[in-house]
Length: 374
Image (cartoon, rainbow, N blue to C red; front, side, top):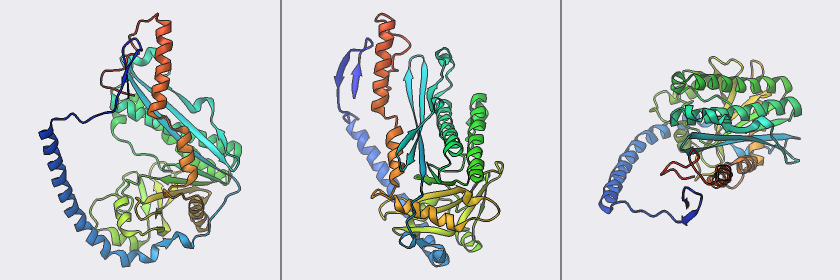
């Protein structure tokens, strides 16, 4: 980590050390270990319940070894990234969206696929509180990914489109009620997701979303904004489970290379009627958390799911699975769009030197807030 003086001079580079008072450290460590013991006891309770229902759901499980690998003629993978710089004048947010078209490995983005918030420096003084600003950046980033996806479906019509993340909109958090700007942005974000679902169905494009952090409660049908349909036997098996995340349930019930369920869960948005996806959980490695695959577009057009396309989606994921349990295209686009701390630090250095040059050595609004490191 680098430290700078206000005039831009590099002071030192150091590795963070633990300097916390030793008795306080021991007290905290003891607290965390006791917490772990209680967590283990709680897990033992619902693990027993889950193992009891294995027989009831076993016929809906499958194994990836029985799925034929699938290689589409053309496909596109998309992802987005964002970062925040905390300076004296307020917060500056950066976002970017990128697509990679396979097999030619062509990179695609447009002039509005990247940017700064606020784009007008005079609005820095109106920067909202940090939690609202972070939510705003997240929504803008995801909207830009969806807008890029829409243009690619319309202009290039790939056979398959893979997104790093869900095909479902993130639910409202309540923060939208505190900020008109945030509420407007959420509406734009929701509309952008509707647009790709509708355009993919119209153009015959298969949509696949790879959800790495499946902290949903779909199996418990715990959502006010989603209508969740599954086989009655599955619904009955999970009805008495404690209120825990899908990822925990699947981690206990699935073995390596297994998926669940088939036929998949059907999820419809209660208010955004263009959105309908089929969801399947997979566990690609025994030592990794399970993932969720959202499938939409042409596979969910009409009243019935196209099971052949659902299976092809699994075959596509299998075909590109890496040793990390994540498809290679997802890792590739994530690597190329990432706004890492080091990159943002270098961009901030360029900003600071440009600022100092224009201000003849004076430094004011662009100072980093004390205690905030890029």
